[in-house]
Length: 439
Image 1: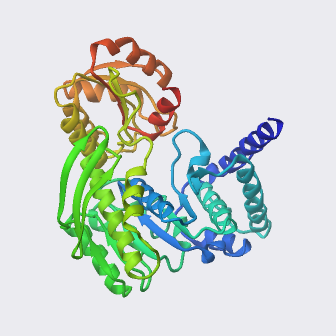
Image 2: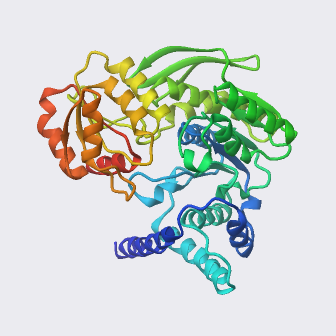
């Protein structure tokens, strides 16, 4: 017990040290990351990477690929962001989050390299760069067979993009988010995402907009990369429930019938489809073995916390749902999923948002889900005030109560729960992370 407490204390200290790099902001570009990794011996060059970018769906797609590869018997690493409840979620190996002890050890090793940089007068890496370096070093020394690597922001200048030759580049949906950094058109955003494409490395995408696909296809051609899109794959959804979906899909003449996923919503079928396509390409190229039973088991076992996640036991009313929708496409997917499963339900929605998001478009979707809201403020300096959010929803015809913070919002929702069939939490990953911790 003492050792566990000591490891937890050390991890808390490590996380505190990592968070000190927040002051350097989020700065795209690879120069700092390249130097840091060079000092560490370039651990990323020894990894077999499946690189995943996109606006929405990349986290779920990563989980599908990760789960299937585990079922195939491989030792697999998974790097994602942000975390919902605990920092360790960001770095996962063989089904387990990085341990507190390992997090502390690898943080100290990376920070020692950072000190070499700053002592030499070089610019300090950012927080995300430090975390990414920790993940690379950890995965290398765990002797992973494969690493499923999620881009943090954009692609071209993201710290994960130091990988010189991934096995495959996966680009999920392209829509509007982080437009201040990535561009104001789908073509500009797609160009940033397509920055992960490397010479001769295959590319698969689930993007749907013509202007985005054109950019990705052109980038693939410029790099001599095989290009495959899933937009028009024959796919038939045969069942949709709160337990997930079943579907048939045909990929290059190979038909997979009765595939099952536990993630909820038609958008998750699209994410599963691009994951299956990527895995099939890897098998075709001789990079992996893909037994049919492993594919089926991995898809079904894959879970993504905070994405239309039902937090109450079957049959219990009201149903508590948390969802990470925080941009227009995410809000659209949530509205469609709620329409599919909760069309006749009385719904109370608890929401809080960041002020730099496209809140007007998001709220147009949210107010089609319900007219009853509790608003609060996420724990983030970029949060929108509850007063401003309340006014925006009321202008759209909603009935709104305001709560100063998430604890108060949850308490208010519980006090009103007998009046509703569903209590839905959405609008910010920072909000649902806190709510999930309390439920």
